[in-house]
Length: 307
Length: 274
Image (cartoon, rainbow over all chains, first blue to last red; front, side):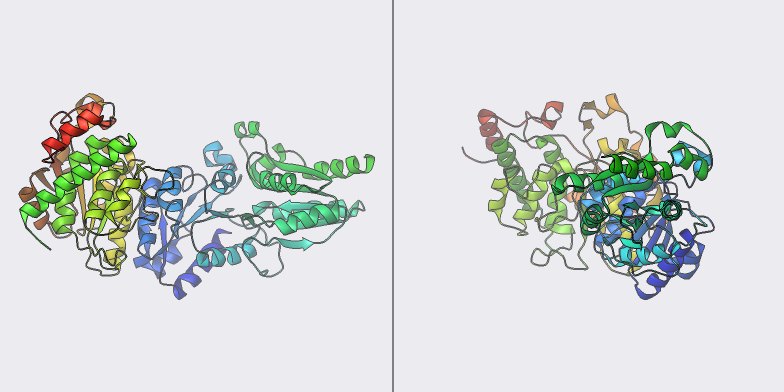
C-alpha cells in the first residue's frame, strides 16, 4: 500500500504544486522518490510530530496541501491536540498519513500497533477518515484525499498487501465498494482486512451461504445507504476491522443501525479486544488472537435461522 | 505606517481600557496576561505589521500568531481599534453566540490568523507560514507572540530547534517574559533562565528589550532580522498586569476580573474620569 501511495502522491504532486510531503524522520525506502522529484516540497522535520502537525497547519493556511507521514500512532496520537486545534479547528487542508494500520508492525509490540486510530480520528470534527482495502484502493484514496477540501486521515497498511481488486476500482470518498453480492449476510470490511474478508466470504459460500462483501474504505463519512441496504437485503452485517472493538468501523455502523429505527437482523463486530495489546507476534498471529471471522459469521447466520 | 510614539501609547491605553471593560463585563480572566503584552501589540499593530484591515486576507500581509491564546481580549481590542471589525463587537466578548471566545479564535473574526489557547502551538504554525513565505518568495514576515509559561511545552522547543536549521529569517518570535505563569512565578514552577542563552544555543539571534517601552520595541523590530539567515527572538521583559497598580506583578490577576470598585480605580489610573 505504501508503494502505491507514494507513486500516486508523486503523480498528484506533478500536477498540483500545492502538494507538500512532511515526515517526522520515518519512511526510509518509501519517501525517497518524492524527496528526489520534489525536493522543495519535501521536509523531514526530525522526530517531532507535534511540530510537524503545526507546521503543516501553517503551510495549509498559506495555500499549501501538506501530507504529514509517519508510522502508526506517531502522526496521530503523538500530536493529537495539534491535529484537533491547529488542523481541525482551522479546517486546514492537511492530510495525515499513517503507515502501519492495525498489526502491520505486529512483532514490534503495542507501541507500534495502530488499533485505536480510527476511533480517535473519527471523533475529530470535519475529519475525513479513509482506510483503503488494498493497493488498488490506495491509489484512488490518495488521489481523492489530495482533492478533498479540509483535513483527511489516510490509514495505510505497510507493504506487500495483496491486490484484492483485479484493477483500480472507481473510487469515491464515502461510497463503499461491493466486491461480491449476496443475500444471507454482509461482511463489511475496512482497511487491509479486505483480503481476509473476501477469503472468508468464499469459504462461507462453499458452505452454501450467499455473502455480500463491502469494502468500507471511508469510515467517515460512512456510506449510510450501503449499510442500510445491506441490513435490509441480507438480513445481517458483520463488521471487520483490524482495530479496537471500541469506536471504529463497527461502532460507526452500530450507531447508524441503532439510530435508523429499522430492523437490521443480526449485527456483530469483528475486531481487536482489549487484551490483545499484551501479545507479540506477526500480523497473522495477532489477527488470530482477535478470534475467527469465519466462525463468527457462521454463528450469526445460525442464530438468525434459529430465531 | 506611523512611528508616532504618542499614537502608540494612546493605542496601548485604549487596548487596556477595552480589555478592562470586556473582562469586567463578563467576569472573564487573564487580564494580567493581556496587560503584560499590550504595549507589544500596540507597537506591532500601530507601526510594525504590514496589514490591511480592508483586506485582512491580503496575500503579502505580515502574519501575527498569538500563541498565548488566553490574551484574546487584548488582541480583539487592538484589531477593533485598527478597524478590522467594529468596536461594538468587543461588547460581545465571551457572550452567548459571540465569535469572540475567551481564548483567541479565528472563526468569524477578521485579522486573526490562528486560533490558540492550548499552549505550545503557535510557533509551529508560524513556522509553517514562514516556510510557505520563503518557498513562494513572498516578502511577508511572520510574528509569533509566546508566553513564558508555554516555553515549558516541549513542542515549543521542537519549533525553536527547527526554524534556524531552515534559515527562517522571516520568522520573529516574541516572548512576553512577565515571569509569572498560572500557578506561581516562573522561577518557582520551572525556571527558564538563562533564557536568551537557550535561544542563542538553538541558533536564534536574540534581542532583549523592555516590553513596555514603545521606543525600545520599535528599535528592536527595526533590526529584524538581526542576522540574515537566522530567525529572531525578541525577549520582552514585561510586568504582569502592567498599567494598573494593584494588578502589577500579581499572580491573582492571571485569573481575576475586576469588581466595580477596582474597575473605577483602574479607569482612573488609565486616565478616564468615572
